[in-house]
Length: 224
Image 1 (cartoon, rainbow, N blue to C red):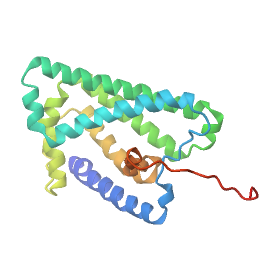
Image 2 (image 1 turned 135 degrees about the vertical axis):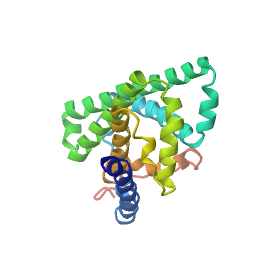
Image 3 (image 1 turned 90 degrees about the vertical axis):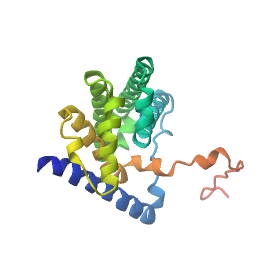
Image 4 (image 1 turned 90 degrees about the horizontal axis):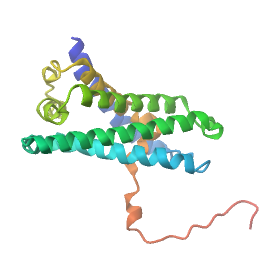
């Protein structure tokens, strides 16, 4: 019963809420689809934390997505020990990079007075969950090695079963509880997504890279 609730019910609740609330938020409050960045308050202390976090988590998520969509390719790659070591070390290194980045962002948010003023309770919750997600992922990678292999054989089929509306929680049941908690915190991040500034990644303005340059003119009242 508990396994079904945690690994069937909760994931579906998180996914449905994330989709519905994200659409409603974009419809009713489109201008809130931003990171609400405090970058204007200070730049130097933001640079290292943000850069390390984004680069680290980008590679980690890319690895997870690759194993999700192409698990057979991952297993074929891991057939050679040297390639397996290379993949595991690279993933762990990127996770450590993301950990340093998120810790730097947390320290900045609580030590800079101006940034602290614009920090909401949900920002704190989100940062705490992200910190746990990354830290637990590192713990799993160290204590339960060869994650790329068992992710491809257990986690990927389980996630696909959720998408196909034919959940198979038995694929997750034999895994250690630390691994299960890592999964649950991932679904919690999805649940929090539409309620926090994390929603901005859904509308990353990649078109900036190819659009023509624009001239921006500030127009304030009383300055005409």
